[in-house]
Image (tube, rainbow, N blue to C red; front, side):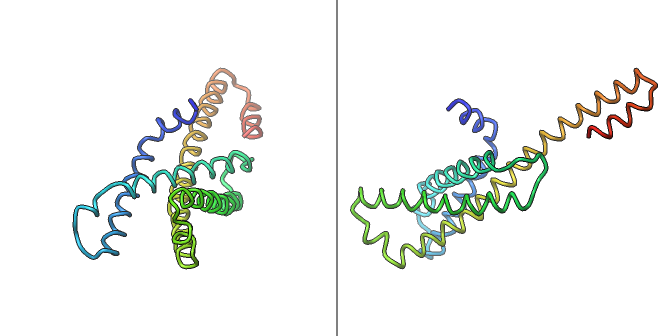
Length: 178
């Protein structure tokens, strides 16, 4: 639990961006559906739920990244595999949560008819593409930043060794190591 809170603290600007994007998205959808401007359009409950569902997606994607990503370098194939499986698992999790909520509020027939199910599934797929892309971009940006700081340390170490030694074999060893 401490690890999750620490990650959230370190990613606070990314999470703020995700929340604000969800808020702007909810305002846009409400304006398109209602076609009028009133106070309800600006209430944040849709943004909060978008943020929670994005958090579930991020958690699912993070699990698959930790499980499947073996190399330090970016692989499009691995990213597509992670994204695809994460989308399927996320859709299953959201549908299971939807069933539980609809059973609690006795709205199963209304929420799980053919039209509602198709619309909600399409919406969740679109949200997976949007928020999943945000997460992958942020995750790989952070990973790249860490790798660059590691390589800077390696280069500094090499330069320090090079300045203390006049042996040219250290250049060859450094090139073979990296």
